[in-house]
Structure formats: structure tokens, C-alpha cells
Image (cartoon, rainbow, N blue to C red; front, side, top):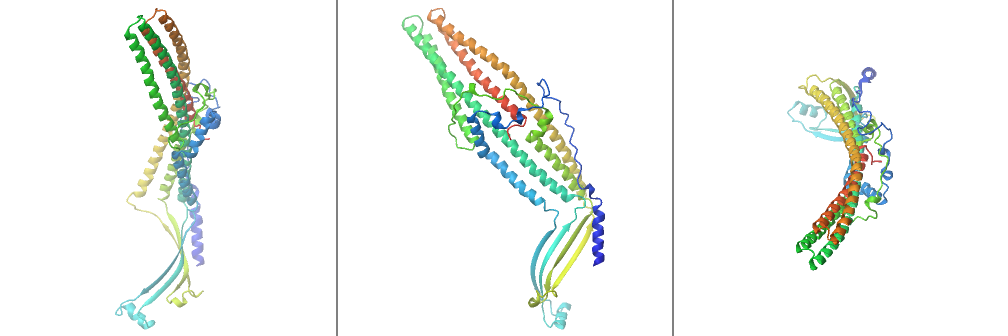
Length: 470
């Protein structure tokens, strides 16, 4: 027995000497990142994504909506459940290096043929025609992690857990951005409603003046009809805006995990404020901060460990099994100790030789999957850099568009005043007044839309840089 113990111990130590290959080294792919983002003047290390969402969004009503969304949004809750599930698997993976231990109790009665050798032997030696066997034993099975297969399995579980954690952060960034976008869209609709209602008052005044002039014979009934149609168009626009406001309120309510309802708001779009210093930071920092990119890198790390597992399956495996307990062929002396005690230990090394090319195929497939995940990681980084660049150029362009649209609104508003004065003095016709009002209405609606788009571009930049999960 001592020789066997020494042999097994020597074998474990010898094989353990090569355990340095237990884990494949990971080399981060060359991402070829630019030194700075396109459309930025200098490579600034500061980034708006480092701000917590409560610092980025200062509007208390929007903060309240985002807080509700983080707490109640169902997509986010599902992601958190996935994290909890992966955490349980990670806890279990920590025990993979320990042996499997089981306990079993069995009783067996067998009666051989009386004409068989066993039957005649029983009658001769035991004086009975059956044999009983009672067994209660612990069973142990353990595989030595010589080639790091178990370590790599644990690493796979850890990477899968971290992926769900990053996925949850990614969902939160999307939820925060979606709530902010919906809120700003609602403020834009409110502003457009104010513009439409103000224009309706102008249309009513124009219609009233036109009717008086028609009654005095200074214009035709066509003028009244045109002024009436202008008023009806504005009334139709108001009805459409009411519909859009209700739909947007419902969408926001669902985002924060509540039944469709009205959304209370006390400020106008012109009162909203976001950080003025829109700094994107460095592309390398964005890669390490953005959850979906980080998640894709963890997928790559997982596939690296899968290659290690496939490699280890091709090497010899040392397995040790042991069992021990009490055994007796009579139930009344089953638990007589030490007479009923028994035990056995078996150690063996198995080397796969011919598995119909299964093991080689598994290794090659694992390597190909790792290569695919390298490409997917690079693509996710490229997409992220592209999204940041899009948000930056949109913000710069919309800044100019907002200035031009503001100037256009000012010009057209002055045009309305001039047209009304000329119309009252008989120096302009009703079409010029209606055209001026229509152009001014469209310009003001467009200005509100441009302001909302600019706010959205800043929110898009914040999300694209990886902000919103802190």
C-alpha cells in the first residue's frame, strides 16, 4: 500500500511540473486607434463620459425620470437577473478543482439456480439458496488539473459573468439616453404647440381683418377662404401635436416602467442646460469605458480559454477514484466496526488516441472562434469610434444650423409685421400676409426641431463615449 501511495504521489508531482502551460497567454489585438477623434481640435484627456448621469443631466424632472427608469425599467431588470444567474455559475466554478463525493446505500438479494455452480456452492458452504449483500459507502472521484483544463473552465465562467455585468451597464446607458431623448422630444413638442397656438391667434386676426375688408368691399371672398384655410391648417397642426405629445408621454412612461400616463414638466426647452464643454477624450479611454466594447473583449478572452480547454483535452488525464464504507452479507452485522469496514483507491492515466478526429476538430474550431471574436472586437471598436465621430460632427453642424434658424425666425417675424401693416394700408394682398405667416410658422417649428436635435446629439455623444452607467 505504501508503494502505491508513493507511486501516485510521484506521478502527480511529475505531471505537475508541466502545469505551467495551464493557461494560454492573452495578447490584446492591435486596434489601430487614432490619437484623437475626428472633428476635435486637440487630443484632450478629459471626457464628458466621466461625469455621472446626475451631473450630466441637471434638470431635476429628467433626473427623476432617469432614476425611475434605472429602478423599474424591465429590460434593465432582466439584465440584472442575468447577472445574478451568472454569479451563481461563477460560485459553482470555484469548486471545480475539488473532488466529487457521494454517498450511497444499497441492499441486494440474489438467488442463483440450484443446478448452477453458484447455487450448489451456496448450499454447500452457507446452507442457504440465496446470498445477501448490504453496502453503505462514500465514493470519491477527482481529476488532477495537470494541463489547466479546470482553471480555464473557471476562467470561462468568470468571463461570462463579467460579460453579463458589462451588458447590464450597456443596457443602462441605453435606457438613460432613451429617457433623455424622449424627454427632450416632449419639450420640443411643447414648444411647437406654443408656436402653433400663437400662430392660430395670428390666423384669427388675419381672418377677422379679411372678413371686415370683404364686408366693406375692399377684398374678395377668395381672401376670406384663404385666411380660413390658413386657420384650419394651424388647427389641424395643433391636433396632430396633441396626438404626438400623448404618444411621447406614453413611451416615456413605459421606459420608466410605469403604465402610460401624463408626464409632469415645468420647464421649456429653452431652459434646458447640458455641459457646455463637450470634450470627447481619447479613443483609447473610450474603449476601456464603453460597456459593449468591453463586453466584446470579454467574449474574446472567453474564447481564448476555450482554446486552452480544447488543448488540454488532447493530453493525458490523471483520475483518482476511491470508495470506502461498511459492507456485509448479513444485515445484523452490517455496521459491526471495524469488521465491516472496506476501502479501495484507484489511480489511472488515460491518453486519448483515436477519437475520430473529434479532439483535433474541437481545437481547430476553438481557434477559429477566437479569430472570429478578434474580428468582432475590432469591429465593435470601429463602430464605437464611428458613433462618437458622428455625434461630434452632428453637434458642430447643428450648432451652426441653430444659429441660422434663429436668424431666419427673426427675419420672418419682422416680415409678418410688415405684411400686416401693408395689408391694412392696402399695399399688400392677403396672399402675402398668409405666406408670411406660413413661412414664419414653419421656421419656428424648424428651429424647435433643430434645438432638440442638438440636445439629442450631445446625449448621443455622452452615450457613445460610454457615459450613463455611473
